[in-house]
Image (cartoon, rainbow over all chains, first blue to last red; front, side, top):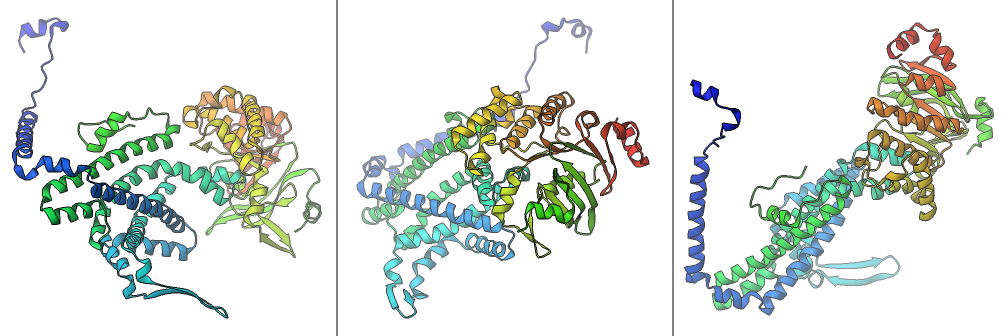
Length: 306
Length: 267
């Protein structure tokens, strides 16, 4: 340090930022790769964009999309109901209920969804028919398993039981996150167990339950594509039926991917508003819609709200 | 089910007694926390319980509204066992519905406030009157506004607990307990979690309650409050009542060496 530097007036000092050479190199490489991908997308004839456009709103694709959405909603609603019941059993003081719930979660979460799907579809191999027989009255009705267990019903049962295994753990963690003082305070006001659960514990648990449930819904939307294996006419199955005929495989897969991404985007927006609703007592300013979209696609660095 | 009068005759409970304890014991596993507590809190009076931590004073308070089950002894609120019915010389645990009914008459204020964090101050106050007492929403709201005014927080009716200071939260918690029209109000170290400058506002509300004739059992470290507001002072240590008496007298002239030592630390 020479004399001139030590004599310089403080306001004359400039700040020289550190140069992040590694960051520049990484950015350059990323841009090159991005360029190559775009070039491939634009020039490779296999992508066949006009065909993509032709099938994007094709009636059977739209029907398939409808079926996928119907499956996702039905399964998720059932999974939330079953999962909540299992979670409450899991937290019960009764050892039997507790063990049953643990076994449920262990089995239905542990066994692969695809195997459960094929199993329910083939239930008739174990149970041929269901009948209701009352003493002194006789058999009231009998139905063949194959008549009830349509591909759609098999898909709903299999995937909702599977998903409920995950939901049970999410709900349980949510309930456990509520401070025990809340239950005590409610009890000292004369509220009974059921009232406390419904009015005090679950509403507060929702803030912890909603974000992972949103993820589960998005996951489930994509998992429903497994049902093509038992010939449920969902989005992917509709596309497969077309390209099996026309051999336009890649364009139709792009169509399918487009619709999945589209629905995931809508779900992310919905999740944002639900989270805001349950977090309203937090006083924190809710994240803007743009921020939510950015978070959904994970581009840009978004500061986590405190 | 025995009547209030029968219980009173049987256990020698004074006619004006609101909280009556005789030989109350409580164990957690092998650890005996309460080793025979006797106490009588006449209706309209204030009993203050002091003692070092671990002396069992909070546990005793929680036994009064059956948040903890007693292991032995007699503990009556307004002449009734809270969690039991006495039949044929045995204490039968009461069903949930009856327990809830009885608890609704016993207000409790906690050290950590325990306001329902997903509800505004007003919603905290109307929740139990509507859901437990079946009060109409309009009536509950009118009453809640009056109570919030009484604790000096009418402007904060729509605030969530997180938006309130500790002292304000505790005042809302007191108003919430009052909304049930309790026969007796239990305070479990109501000012211990507060910053020193916020203690005063809570004590003012409690003093006002005592003057209005509310029966109160207060576990506290505020000796000044005990001296000025309390009708009796109980010093607990090691699960027994070490000394009891008229607050001014006892604080000025403690008889037991253990009491003297404790008071010398907190005064």
